[in-house]
Length: 531
Image (cartoon, rainbow, N blue to C red):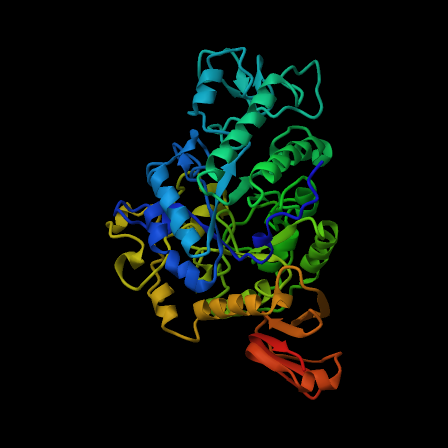
């Protein structure tokens, strides 16, 4: 049974920051980001107020899926540097009060992993899911083994065998969860986590955490697996955090995770709560998605209700047991600045994200309004569909004006992905010098969140108006209003006149209170301490 201990205290008030290491900062001039480059840029994150980093996979890999095809879990990819370089990054981050989390690809490996090469040559090896005859979804064995294996995503990613919740004698590859192969893989996960935690890593974000046990209605057996691993962490590494890529926070926390993300997929509604906020049907779009206008859209035709209802249901089910994480974007999903949405509109989005009762996760570059770049070539498996190219969200970080944008000294044709070619592309240096910039606002909002705990992940919230603008009360004392639409709005406030009359603006642009009325210009936000 999962420990009832609430988890590491540091996670409660954390502001997460996701780094795609290939494109964050290149220290050696090869056009690909690396550990030393990240280390060199830690002062930016400390200045911003970040206290936890999540790095996309940095283990050894042939990079046919951008590192999500791991060939050695205990070695780093040479493109990023050695293990000593990663440890140096962790130590330098710790000195600045920043923890580092790794991305653990738990469900599959590369087809070049020694485990798979051995399994492909030995019919008695069941670390992977093998059939002795063709079966739906299976791929012909590449080695001397006469059989077929099950991949998780691309054919180069054979699924590790954690067993099937439902077995069937007619399909002998459906081994039970306690068969020899699944037991060996559970033990390997424990060893991998222990290895990196002992080197100073603060925890893991687990890739596709809900997918390990196959044919698992209700994810019951998958939850048992993660509960077992969480209990080990509680015993051996009590300050370590375990974050899920599940997309269903209530289920993930019940399974033993400390936190889960609202995602563009997952849960009974296939990620609609997050998409109803940010997805404007530009950038990364699956053809199967069906939704109306998102809330953060200039036309003012969306609604925050779908997200609020999903958040409320998950918050009720996870209260006291875990955390809900709200990201601005991620490596698989469109940036905030995508399609018709401009940087002018992002301030309201951050004012919402950094004052709503969730753990915020900032995707690198969103703090300056980097845009999603359409039309890039397929790069290390970035294209998933006719309208779903993840490369557009993975372009180089823009640190300063000029060629290379401070990302790399390499020739532009050697960059992992091209820079945004727009002459007005945003950058850190320019925005740090501008007190009215998005970057400076994000920094102030993070500081405001820290200075007023009622604005944090677990303060109370009362929604006063769930249209345009969204108006809510945090901790009974802090009024927050955001208007993502272009049209100005005016509405009466259902609050006592003395409280409104004595209100003090903590951070506001285009929102004013007076005479029992709230007035919000287009693309505005306001955070007020009531009298």
